[in-house]
Image 1 (tube, one colour):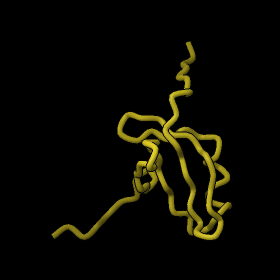
Image 2 (cartoon, rainbow, N blue to C red):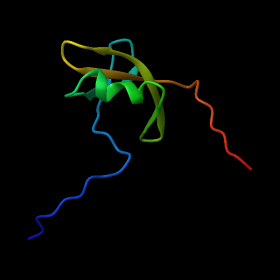
Image 3 (cartoon, rainbow, N blue to C red):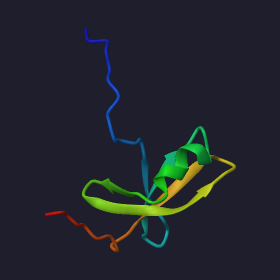
Length: 78
């Protein structure tokens, strides 16, 4: 029986949800609060082919919220 697991690089555990008005969002648990979140606030998360951007956080529960956002550009260098 295999008993070894590896940590996936550049991946975060998220909880996907849909608000009552139909907005899709991701919730991230942040055990270290803002220290963990600060580097992520200017990042775009890709989940099942959809983009999500930072919208806010609940400091009482140490959770961050990333909402689905169509206003994301992709660029490449030549």
